[in-house]
Image (cartoon, rainbow, N blue to C red; front, side, top):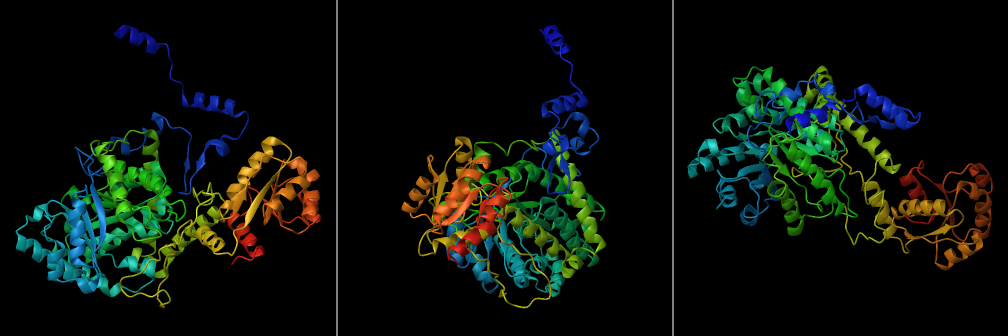
Length: 620
């Protein structure tokens, strides 16, 4: 049998890379390989259509081991388990405690309490943690940064009073004053001096972290992956440098920093992001000469993004967050928060929170993602992505260092400008349908209504007002779908829902394709769209449209036939409805000369076009 196998395999000669390229070029029939098959990513590097062993042999990442420096393959050696984390608004200690105890019995093993500064007291914490076995669950806290020292002292006193083993307490305090500069433009430099004292309070708790890097705020503002990663590294290094300069031992300082990072929809690249992040952070910490390599671990709490979430067709958010949580889980994060699908338009309810928990539990208990360490290791594609992301993120890190470090960079606004430019670019691409938002600018639900849903407005718990003057720039965290949602809600508020009628005529294939495109295009504004099988004459089609109460009549045919049908249709309508031609025919200039001014096709700006139509229809 062995000899048979050897002979069988010997009959096949492995093709070389050049032979693959030659075959691809033949199949392309003269088309440009670079334009057709090479992916020009937004991250600043190109991705080839295929990779081979020879491509990764020169890389260092495939030779790393799990649980060993530089931790590209994860911080653990024998498993890939992570904490299933749920965030709880703790406005009332008793209610929050009740909810915490309930979700702990439903698969959660990590709790995150958000507490207002006015509620920070020993009595509040006593009631909040009543009945919770603190050494069996990860505990995380978020409060006003000015009250974090007080909260830290109360927690340590509570743990000591209950007699907990310091080695078994796992958790964090989300203390990140610099985030306030980035997101709100507020001056918080005075609070930064609290860091050494905060670290000292938890110095005997090896698994409790108290300095956060909240790059999730960049992710939720539309940052590209290399931007979030590069700035997160610079952000963490700023805190690390400040602690060391204040006399804190580098090993202790590094062990107290936690990264709260976002996860976007780019599945494989997000896996590579966390792998690259661990590798680069380990190299950064190593320069401070810690006493052990364990201090070089990058502790990451991953949070699925809100940037791509939608108010309309909101159950699609489940698909988005599921692939995002898969990326984070496979990449080996410390803990994971799945953002409930309804969080962008309401306070998550019991149903949406249960679904969010179960999304993680499915990955653990049915997919067994927690059993295999770094399953992506050895994938030529992901190994190459890891290295490419690391190289591009490192460029951003070095740029920030040249500006004097992260604090200096955010004070001059270069970080905020960079993120805002990306956000603006992505909104432009979405408005042009060059970045798809399923259910919003592509394949919207034709009959869905908002039913009173309104986008949630983020508020600051420290008394910040939207119109308050601030000394620094801030990022604009506007969701990608927000512009389309505002347009659609405005349409719903109109006295009459506009009706768009497809006047399909002529070539069957062309009229069907253009009618489908036009229906999707116009339904994105909340218009009622009426498709048709076809008409024998334009007069018949126009009459049917007007009988249906059409406000917009869209002529759908082939480019060649527009020369025959468009002008007669426009003249017959005679201003009784808005006339639109679906396409960009060669005779467009002739049609415009006849008075036709509305054309929709893949090259027009969808959002601006729909805003213009709303204005013509009297919708504000």
